Length: 65
Image 1 (cartoon, rainbow, N blue to C red):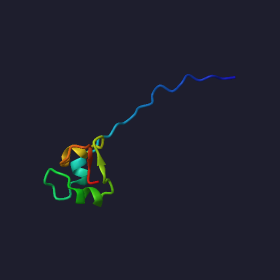
Image 2: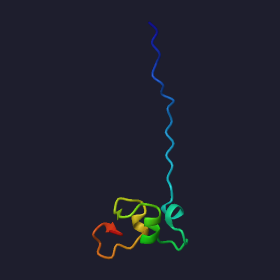
Image 3: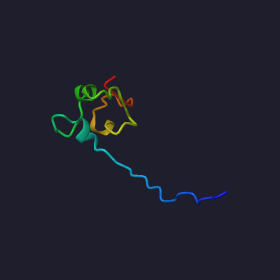
Image 4: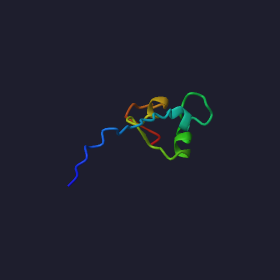
């Protein structure tokens, strides 16, 4: 039998996407509910990267519900 050492040259490429570049259609620095719906991400939860660019009026952690 031949044994080979485990491959330790595995590199992981992490790509961070800018939510404004993805979802801000009118480039105003904010993401509206219309834009969120257009891209299929509504309702937007607090954990979503786009959330901080949106207005959660009642601060319940969900926008566009």
